Length: 132
Image (cartoon, rainbow, N blue to C red):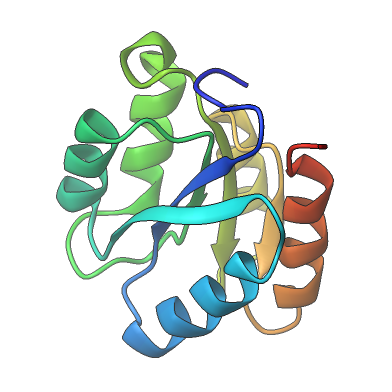
């Protein structure tokens, strides 16, 4: 992945729930080599963070306080070089098959359901973590 240092996976977390942000950050940062370097609660803020931060992975919720996670995925998909081509996954409550297909078409590598997929998301990030 572009922008990865030898020992760090830099994550942007796009999630509008402060509680869920806190829980996810805690879980992600327990993984050796993973750091949540940026977070956003809306589409515009996520794009701003992507512009100023070099990230390796974007974890994106679809329903946000402002805008949509689909807008973030679309921008990453249409202009990957603008942001260093980070890996993107979705963490959302909207797991309908049509939504999953749309996310995949916009370049999301995986889709995790908020209701039962937090452990699977953490395991997925562990697979991406840099090996020392």
